[in-house]
Image 1 (tube, rainbow, N blue to C red):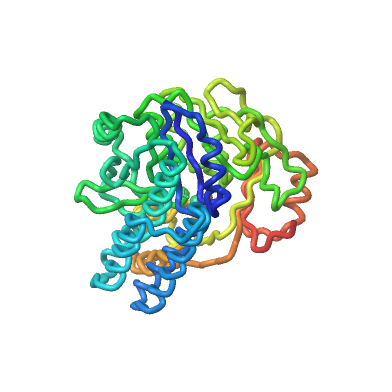
Image 2 (image 1 turned 90 degrees about the horizontal axis):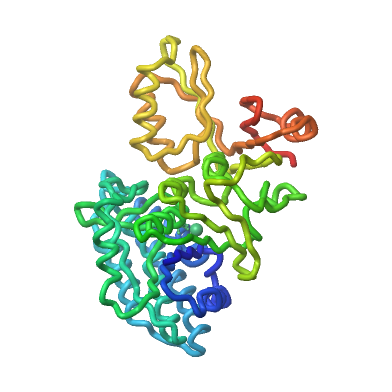
Length: 420
Ligand code: ASP
Ligand code: MG
Protein backbone atom coordinates (compact mmCIF):
# COMPACT_ATOMS: atom_id res chain seq x y z
CA UNK A 1 0.00 0.00 0.00
CA UNK A 2 1.11 3.55 -0.78
CA UNK A 3 -0.33 6.70 0.74
CA UNK A 4 -0.67 9.89 -1.30
CA UNK A 5 -1.65 13.19 0.26
CA UNK A 6 -2.96 16.14 -1.75
CA UNK A 7 -3.19 19.53 -0.06
CA UNK A 8 -5.76 22.23 -0.62
CA UNK A 9 -3.61 24.17 -3.07
CA UNK A 10 -3.24 21.16 -5.37
CA UNK A 11 -7.00 20.65 -5.65
CA UNK A 12 -8.06 24.31 -5.66
CA UNK A 13 -9.65 24.11 -9.10
CA UNK A 14 -10.77 21.64 -11.77
CA UNK A 15 -7.31 21.53 -13.35
CA UNK A 16 -5.87 20.50 -10.00
CA UNK A 17 -8.38 17.67 -9.64
CA UNK A 18 -7.63 16.49 -13.18
CA UNK A 19 -3.96 16.56 -12.35
CA UNK A 20 -4.62 14.44 -9.23
CA UNK A 21 -6.41 12.00 -11.53
CA UNK A 22 -3.34 11.96 -13.78
CA UNK A 23 -0.99 11.34 -10.83
CA UNK A 24 -2.99 8.40 -9.47
CA UNK A 25 -3.59 6.90 -12.91
CA UNK A 26 -2.65 3.25 -13.03
CA UNK A 27 -1.96 3.02 -9.28
CA UNK A 28 -3.17 0.05 -7.28
CA UNK A 29 -3.21 -0.35 -3.53
CA UNK A 30 -3.41 3.32 -2.86
CA UNK A 31 -4.86 5.35 -0.01
CA UNK A 32 -5.44 8.97 -0.99
CA UNK A 33 -5.79 11.62 1.68
CA UNK A 34 -7.17 14.97 0.54
CA UNK A 35 -7.52 18.36 2.24
CA UNK A 36 -10.26 20.90 1.71
CA UNK A 37 -10.16 22.59 -1.71
CA UNK A 38 -8.24 25.85 -1.96
CA UNK A 39 -8.92 28.19 0.91
CA UNK A 40 -12.13 26.47 2.01
CA UNK A 41 -10.93 25.89 5.58
CA UNK A 42 -10.33 29.63 6.01
CA UNK A 43 -13.80 30.33 4.62
CA UNK A 44 -15.32 27.81 7.04
CA UNK A 45 -13.41 29.45 9.89
CA UNK A 46 -15.21 32.65 8.91
CA UNK A 47 -18.54 30.80 8.97
CA UNK A 48 -17.70 29.69 12.50
CA UNK A 49 -16.62 33.21 13.52
CA UNK A 50 -19.98 34.54 12.30
CA UNK A 51 -21.74 31.84 14.32
CA UNK A 52 -19.71 32.88 17.38
CA UNK A 53 -20.86 36.46 16.88
CA UNK A 54 -24.48 35.55 16.24
CA UNK A 55 -24.27 36.79 12.62
CA UNK A 56 -26.40 34.18 10.88
CA UNK A 57 -26.97 36.13 7.72
CA UNK A 58 -23.25 36.63 7.15
CA UNK A 59 -22.63 32.96 7.90
CA UNK A 60 -25.22 31.91 5.30
CA UNK A 61 -23.74 34.33 2.77
CA UNK A 62 -20.33 32.76 3.29
CA UNK A 63 -21.76 29.24 2.91
CA UNK A 64 -23.40 30.29 -0.35
CA UNK A 65 -20.03 31.38 -1.71
CA UNK A 66 -18.39 28.13 -0.63
CA UNK A 67 -21.17 26.18 -2.32
CA UNK A 68 -20.86 28.20 -5.54
CA UNK A 69 -17.10 27.67 -5.57
CA UNK A 70 -17.49 23.90 -5.34
CA UNK A 71 -20.36 23.87 -7.84
CA UNK A 72 -18.15 25.58 -10.41
CA UNK A 73 -15.40 23.00 -9.94
CA UNK A 74 -17.95 20.19 -10.33
CA UNK A 75 -19.41 21.82 -13.42
CA UNK A 76 -16.00 22.11 -15.03
CA UNK A 77 -15.08 18.52 -14.16
CA UNK A 78 -18.31 16.98 -15.45
CA UNK A 79 -18.56 19.37 -18.37
CA UNK A 80 -22.05 20.60 -17.40
CA UNK A 81 -23.90 21.73 -14.28
CA UNK A 82 -24.15 18.54 -12.24
CA UNK A 83 -25.75 17.91 -8.91
CA UNK A 84 -23.94 15.45 -6.68
CA UNK A 85 -26.51 14.40 -4.07
CA UNK A 86 -23.95 13.71 -1.37
CA UNK A 87 -22.48 17.19 -1.78
CA UNK A 88 -25.91 18.84 -1.64
CA UNK A 89 -26.61 16.84 1.50
CA UNK A 90 -23.40 17.99 3.15
CA UNK A 91 -24.20 21.63 2.45
CA UNK A 92 -27.67 21.02 3.85
CA UNK A 93 -26.18 19.66 7.07
CA UNK A 94 -23.81 22.60 7.33
CA UNK A 95 -26.68 25.07 6.93
CA UNK A 96 -28.73 23.25 9.54
CA UNK A 97 -25.89 23.47 12.04
CA UNK A 98 -25.34 27.15 11.45
CA UNK A 99 -29.03 28.04 11.55
CA UNK A 100 -30.50 25.71 14.15
CA UNK A 101 -27.85 25.17 16.80
CA UNK A 102 -28.01 27.17 19.96
CA UNK A 103 -24.37 28.23 20.20
CA UNK A 104 -22.72 28.33 23.60
CA UNK A 105 -19.24 29.71 24.10
CA UNK A 106 -18.34 26.73 26.29
CA UNK A 107 -18.69 24.50 23.19
CA UNK A 108 -16.71 26.78 20.86
CA UNK A 109 -14.10 24.16 19.89
CA UNK A 110 -16.77 21.51 19.30
CA UNK A 111 -18.64 23.75 16.84
CA UNK A 112 -15.43 24.90 15.25
CA UNK A 113 -14.52 21.29 14.46
CA UNK A 114 -18.02 20.37 13.33
CA UNK A 115 -18.08 23.24 10.87
CA UNK A 116 -14.56 23.25 9.44
CA UNK A 117 -14.62 19.47 8.88
CA UNK A 118 -17.08 20.04 6.02
CA UNK A 119 -14.23 21.27 3.82
CA UNK A 120 -12.63 17.83 3.70
CA UNK A 121 -15.96 15.98 3.61
CA UNK A 122 -16.96 17.93 0.52
CA UNK A 123 -13.59 17.78 -1.28
CA UNK A 124 -13.20 14.02 -0.83
CA UNK A 125 -16.78 13.39 -1.94
CA UNK A 126 -16.20 15.30 -5.17
CA UNK A 127 -12.83 13.67 -5.81
CA UNK A 128 -13.99 10.14 -5.06
CA UNK A 129 -16.98 10.61 -7.39
CA UNK A 130 -14.78 12.10 -10.07
CA UNK A 131 -12.31 9.21 -9.92
CA UNK A 132 -15.19 6.75 -10.26
CA UNK A 133 -16.67 8.84 -13.07
CA UNK A 134 -13.36 8.64 -14.94
CA UNK A 135 -12.96 4.91 -14.48
CA UNK A 136 -10.83 4.69 -11.36
CA UNK A 137 -12.90 2.60 -9.01
CA UNK A 138 -12.44 3.64 -5.42
CA UNK A 139 -14.13 3.78 -2.05
CA UNK A 140 -14.84 6.95 -0.03
CA UNK A 141 -13.82 6.49 3.59
CA UNK A 142 -15.41 8.53 6.38
CA UNK A 143 -12.49 9.36 8.66
CA UNK A 144 -14.87 10.60 11.39
CA UNK A 145 -15.77 6.99 12.07
CA UNK A 146 -12.38 5.53 11.10
CA UNK A 147 -9.96 7.60 13.15
CA UNK A 148 -10.67 7.49 16.86
CA UNK A 149 -9.09 10.55 18.43
CA UNK A 150 -8.86 11.74 21.99
CA UNK A 151 -11.67 13.90 23.34
CA UNK A 152 -9.97 17.16 22.48
CA UNK A 153 -11.51 19.45 19.92
CA UNK A 154 -9.48 21.63 17.57
CA UNK A 155 -6.18 19.86 18.30
CA UNK A 156 -6.92 16.15 18.58
CA UNK A 157 -4.48 13.26 18.31
CA UNK A 158 -5.34 9.97 16.68
CA UNK A 159 -5.50 6.95 18.96
CA UNK A 160 -3.59 4.58 16.70
CA UNK A 161 -4.47 1.45 18.61
CA UNK A 162 -8.18 2.18 18.64
CA UNK A 163 -8.14 3.22 14.97
CA UNK A 164 -6.25 0.21 13.59
CA UNK A 165 -9.14 -2.24 13.56
CA UNK A 166 -11.54 0.30 12.18
CA UNK A 167 -9.29 1.40 9.36
CA UNK A 168 -8.41 -2.14 8.36
CA UNK A 169 -12.05 -3.21 8.54
CA UNK A 170 -13.15 -0.33 6.35
CA UNK A 171 -10.86 -1.54 3.54
CA UNK A 172 -12.02 -5.14 3.64
CA UNK A 173 -14.58 -6.64 1.24
CA UNK A 174 -14.83 -3.44 -0.72
CA UNK A 175 -13.81 -4.99 -4.02
CA UNK A 176 -11.48 -2.06 -4.71
CA UNK A 177 -7.92 -1.19 -3.82
CA UNK A 178 -8.04 2.59 -4.07
CA UNK A 179 -9.44 4.59 -1.16
CA UNK A 180 -10.13 8.27 -0.64
CA UNK A 181 -10.27 9.69 2.88
CA UNK A 182 -10.32 13.12 4.47
CA UNK A 183 -7.25 14.64 5.97
CA UNK A 184 -7.47 16.72 9.14
CA UNK A 185 -10.53 15.10 10.75
CA UNK A 186 -11.48 12.26 13.04
CA UNK A 187 -14.08 11.35 15.64
CA UNK A 188 -13.92 11.67 19.42
CA UNK A 189 -15.02 8.83 21.72
CA UNK A 190 -18.32 10.70 22.32
CA UNK A 191 -19.08 10.53 18.58
CA UNK A 192 -18.49 14.19 17.79
CA UNK A 193 -16.18 15.36 15.01
CA UNK A 194 -12.65 16.44 15.87
CA UNK A 195 -9.91 18.17 13.88
CA UNK A 196 -6.21 17.52 14.22
CA UNK A 197 -4.91 21.11 14.04
CA UNK A 198 -4.57 23.37 11.00
CA UNK A 199 -2.62 21.79 8.16
CA UNK A 200 -3.16 18.45 9.87
CA UNK A 201 -3.83 16.41 6.72
CA UNK A 202 -0.17 15.41 6.49
CA UNK A 203 -0.52 13.88 9.93
CA UNK A 204 -3.68 12.01 8.86
CA UNK A 205 -1.80 10.52 5.92
CA UNK A 206 1.11 9.52 8.16
CA UNK A 207 -1.20 7.72 10.58
CA UNK A 208 -2.85 5.85 7.70
CA UNK A 209 0.61 4.90 6.40
CA UNK A 210 1.62 3.71 9.86
CA UNK A 211 -1.45 1.58 10.43
CA UNK A 212 -1.38 0.02 6.97
CA UNK A 213 2.42 -0.50 7.01
CA UNK A 214 2.65 1.46 3.79
CA UNK A 215 5.76 1.13 1.66
CA UNK A 216 5.88 4.94 1.34
CA UNK A 217 3.94 8.14 1.78
CA UNK A 218 4.02 10.98 -0.75
CA UNK A 219 2.90 14.55 -0.25
CA UNK A 220 2.18 16.29 -3.58
CA UNK A 221 2.92 20.00 -3.42
CA UNK A 222 3.28 23.05 -5.62
CA UNK A 223 7.06 23.13 -5.09
CA UNK A 224 9.84 20.89 -6.40
CA UNK A 225 10.41 19.38 -2.97
CA UNK A 226 11.60 20.72 0.37
CA UNK A 227 13.49 23.96 -0.18
CA UNK A 228 16.01 25.52 2.21
CA UNK A 229 13.88 28.69 2.38
CA UNK A 230 10.52 30.03 1.28
CA UNK A 231 11.19 31.23 -2.29
CA UNK A 232 8.49 33.90 -1.91
CA UNK A 233 10.59 35.52 0.83
CA UNK A 234 14.19 34.55 0.20
CA UNK A 235 15.38 34.36 -3.36
CA UNK A 236 18.06 31.79 -4.15
CA UNK A 237 16.13 29.07 -2.35
CA UNK A 238 17.40 25.64 -3.37
CA UNK A 239 15.91 22.19 -3.15
CA UNK A 240 17.15 19.73 -0.54
CA UNK A 241 17.35 16.22 -2.05
CA UNK A 242 17.20 14.26 1.19
CA UNK A 243 16.55 14.92 4.86
CA UNK A 244 16.41 12.76 7.94
CA UNK A 245 13.36 12.53 10.21
CA UNK A 246 14.96 14.53 13.02
CA UNK A 247 15.97 17.50 10.86
CA UNK A 248 12.51 17.48 9.35
CA UNK A 249 10.81 17.62 12.74
CA UNK A 250 13.01 20.53 13.75
CA UNK A 251 12.35 22.40 10.54
CA UNK A 252 8.62 21.80 10.77
CA UNK A 253 8.61 22.91 14.39
CA UNK A 254 10.43 26.14 13.49
CA UNK A 255 7.62 26.90 11.07
CA UNK A 256 8.88 25.59 7.74
CA UNK A 257 5.76 24.87 5.78
CA UNK A 258 7.03 21.57 4.51
CA UNK A 259 4.99 19.26 6.56
CA UNK A 260 2.95 19.29 9.74
CA UNK A 261 5.24 18.61 12.74
CA UNK A 262 3.06 15.71 13.95
CA UNK A 263 3.61 13.83 10.66
CA UNK A 264 7.05 12.42 11.24
CA UNK A 265 6.63 10.30 14.37
CA UNK A 266 4.16 7.75 12.95
CA UNK A 267 6.40 7.31 9.90
CA UNK A 268 9.66 7.16 11.83
CA UNK A 269 8.28 4.46 14.12
CA UNK A 270 7.86 2.18 11.13
CA UNK A 271 10.72 3.56 9.07
CA UNK A 272 8.39 4.56 6.22
CA UNK A 273 9.99 6.97 3.73
CA UNK A 274 8.19 10.24 3.06
CA UNK A 275 8.44 11.86 -0.37
CA UNK A 276 7.65 15.52 -0.93
CA UNK A 277 6.95 15.67 -4.65
CA UNK A 278 6.00 18.32 -7.20
CA UNK A 279 2.37 18.16 -8.16
CA UNK A 280 3.17 19.50 -11.62
CA UNK A 281 5.53 16.70 -12.67
CA UNK A 282 5.23 13.19 -11.32
CA UNK A 283 8.50 12.12 -12.91
CA UNK A 284 10.57 14.46 -10.70
CA UNK A 285 12.09 12.88 -7.59
CA UNK A 286 11.26 15.63 -5.07
CA UNK A 287 12.76 15.28 -1.60
CA UNK A 288 12.99 12.04 0.34
CA UNK A 289 12.76 12.04 4.13
CA UNK A 290 13.99 8.93 5.88
CA UNK A 291 16.02 7.68 8.80
CA UNK A 292 19.37 7.23 7.10
CA UNK A 293 20.19 10.65 5.61
CA UNK A 294 22.98 12.55 7.43
CA UNK A 295 22.21 15.85 9.14
CA UNK A 296 21.67 18.76 6.82
CA UNK A 297 24.58 21.23 6.67
CA UNK A 298 23.36 23.92 4.27
CA UNK A 299 21.79 27.08 5.75
CA UNK A 300 18.04 26.92 6.22
CA UNK A 301 15.88 30.01 6.64
CA UNK A 302 12.39 29.82 8.04
CA UNK A 303 10.12 32.79 8.50
CA UNK A 304 6.91 32.25 10.41
CA UNK A 305 4.32 35.00 10.11
CA UNK A 306 1.15 35.71 12.09
CA UNK A 307 2.85 35.46 15.43
CA UNK A 308 2.19 37.20 18.72
CA UNK A 309 4.82 37.82 21.37
CA UNK A 310 3.59 37.66 24.96
CA UNK A 311 5.81 38.87 27.77
CA UNK A 312 4.48 37.54 31.02
CA UNK A 313 5.44 38.80 34.48
CA UNK A 314 4.10 38.25 37.97
CA UNK A 315 2.27 41.27 39.24
CA UNK A 316 4.35 41.13 42.42
CA UNK A 317 7.64 40.95 40.42
CA UNK A 318 8.46 37.61 41.93
CA UNK A 319 10.47 35.18 39.85
CA UNK A 320 8.66 33.40 37.09
CA UNK A 321 9.81 29.91 38.00
CA UNK A 322 8.71 26.30 37.84
CA UNK A 323 5.35 26.43 39.55
CA UNK A 324 4.41 29.55 37.61
CA UNK A 325 5.58 27.95 34.39
CA UNK A 326 3.19 25.12 35.15
CA UNK A 327 0.26 27.52 35.48
CA UNK A 328 1.18 29.39 32.30
CA UNK A 329 1.68 26.29 30.17
CA UNK A 330 -1.46 24.61 31.33
CA UNK A 331 -3.38 27.70 30.22
CA UNK A 332 -1.65 27.59 26.81
CA UNK A 333 -2.66 23.97 26.55
CA UNK A 334 -6.23 24.75 27.55
CA UNK A 335 -6.54 27.46 24.90
CA UNK A 336 -4.82 25.36 22.18
CA UNK A 337 -2.11 27.94 21.74
CA UNK A 338 1.08 26.71 20.08
CA UNK A 339 4.34 28.15 21.35
CA UNK A 340 7.23 28.46 18.91
CA UNK A 341 9.84 30.21 21.03
CA UNK A 342 10.39 30.49 24.76
CA UNK A 343 12.64 33.16 26.20
CA UNK A 344 12.91 33.54 29.93
CA UNK A 345 14.70 35.83 32.35
CA UNK A 346 14.39 35.90 36.14
CA UNK A 347 11.28 38.03 36.13
CA UNK A 348 9.60 37.44 32.85
CA UNK A 349 8.74 34.80 30.32
CA UNK A 350 8.57 35.67 26.61
CA UNK A 351 6.50 33.42 24.40
CA UNK A 352 6.16 33.65 20.65
CA UNK A 353 2.86 31.99 19.77
CA UNK A 354 0.48 31.66 16.84
CA UNK A 355 -2.08 34.45 16.59
CA UNK A 356 -5.56 33.03 17.31
CA UNK A 357 -8.95 33.97 18.63
CA UNK A 358 -7.94 32.44 21.99
CA UNK A 359 -5.24 35.01 22.79
CA UNK A 360 -7.69 37.40 24.46
CA UNK A 361 -9.08 34.60 26.62
CA UNK A 362 -5.57 33.53 27.53
CA UNK A 363 -4.59 37.02 28.62
CA UNK A 364 -7.71 37.31 30.78
CA UNK A 365 -6.98 33.96 32.39
CA UNK A 366 -3.34 34.94 33.02
CA UNK A 367 -4.42 38.20 34.59
CA UNK A 368 -6.77 36.29 36.86
CA UNK A 369 -3.71 34.28 38.00
CA UNK A 370 -1.93 37.51 38.98
CA UNK A 371 0.23 37.80 35.89
CA UNK A 372 0.78 40.90 33.85
CA UNK A 373 0.96 40.45 30.09
CA UNK A 374 2.64 42.67 27.53
CA UNK A 375 1.38 41.89 24.04
CA UNK A 376 3.21 42.53 20.76
CA UNK A 377 1.04 41.52 17.87
CA UNK A 378 1.88 41.25 14.17
CA UNK A 379 5.35 39.90 14.75
CA UNK A 380 7.24 37.24 12.81
CA UNK A 381 9.67 34.57 13.91
CA UNK A 382 12.80 34.03 11.86
CA UNK A 383 14.91 30.91 12.37
CA UNK A 384 18.22 30.35 10.61
CA UNK A 385 19.82 26.93 10.97
CA UNK A 386 23.48 26.57 9.99
CA UNK A 387 23.88 30.33 9.76
CA UNK A 388 27.06 32.10 8.60
CA UNK A 389 28.41 35.64 9.07
CA UNK A 390 26.75 36.96 5.97
CA UNK A 391 23.31 35.62 6.86
CA UNK A 392 23.70 36.76 10.45
CA UNK A 393 24.47 40.31 9.37
CA UNK A 394 21.74 40.50 6.79
CA UNK A 395 18.89 38.82 8.60
CA UNK A 396 19.68 39.41 12.27
CA UNK A 397 21.94 42.40 12.84
CA UNK A 398 20.25 44.56 10.24
CA UNK A 399 16.70 43.79 11.35
CA UNK A 400 14.62 45.34 14.12
CA UNK A 401 14.08 42.54 16.53
CA UNK A 402 12.50 42.24 19.95
CA UNK A 403 13.97 38.89 20.99
CA UNK A 404 17.15 37.16 19.83
CA UNK A 405 18.30 33.65 20.70
CA UNK A 406 21.68 32.54 19.44
CA UNK A 407 23.01 28.99 19.58
CA UNK A 408 26.07 27.53 17.87
CA UNK A 409 23.88 26.00 15.14
CA UNK A 410 20.90 28.28 14.96
CA UNK A 411 19.71 31.78 15.56
CA UNK A 412 16.12 32.80 16.16
CA UNK A 413 14.71 36.30 16.27
CA UNK A 414 11.27 37.79 16.79
CA UNK A 415 10.86 40.65 14.33
CA UNK A 416 8.41 43.50 14.41
CA UNK A 417 8.73 44.16 10.72
CA UNK A 418 10.68 42.02 8.36
CA UNK A 419 12.87 44.04 6.08
CA UNK A 420 13.98 41.48 3.55
N1 ASP B 1 -7.77 21.90 5.40
C1 ASP B 1 -7.02 21.98 6.63
C2 ASP B 1 -6.32 23.32 6.71
O1 ASP B 1 -6.36 24.09 5.77
C3 ASP B 1 -6.07 20.84 6.80
C4 ASP B 1 -4.94 20.79 5.84
O2 ASP B 1 -4.92 21.52 4.84
O3 ASP B 1 -4.01 20.01 6.06
O4 ASP B 1 -5.73 23.60 7.71
MG1 MG C 1 -4.28 23.15 3.71
